[in-house]
Length: 173
Image (tube, rainbow, N blue to C red; front, side, top):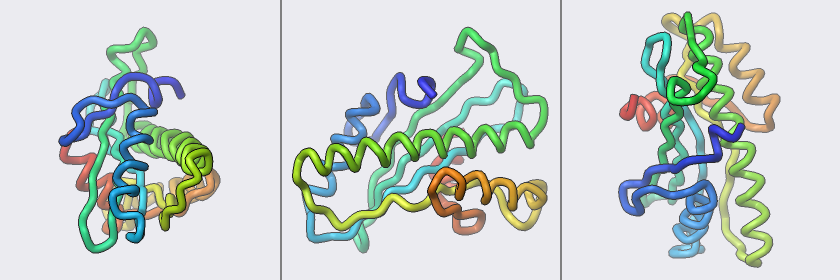
């Protein structure tokens, strides 16, 4: 889990941020226009290969006005335990696990900070996007991935609705 929370997340406007910095920036963004509705979503992608990196994206959407994203690249080859992924199944499952871990920690910390600051925002953190779909190589994994995401307390979105994984995170693979 520490590989998800430690290190930095990148945002185009803010540069590199810690996990706590991401939370502060998400809350600051909502505080700019507290009358708006916000949705926070997490998704991950990875390139093929035995030692891929995993860009995990956190997206905040302000209804009708676009949004922002924060990206963290997890690279196991740089760690002391060189984790290898010998097939696409292992890689896709790692994407989903990383997304669920980050989403769980992020939602919990967001709720704590918003309560502690006595802020009242209209927001939800309900979805985790997975880069799987009913067509192609990952079609046999859909039920397993959906169950894993639901088991962590989130609603899954798969292709073509999983834009955080298949577009935002994919752009940085």
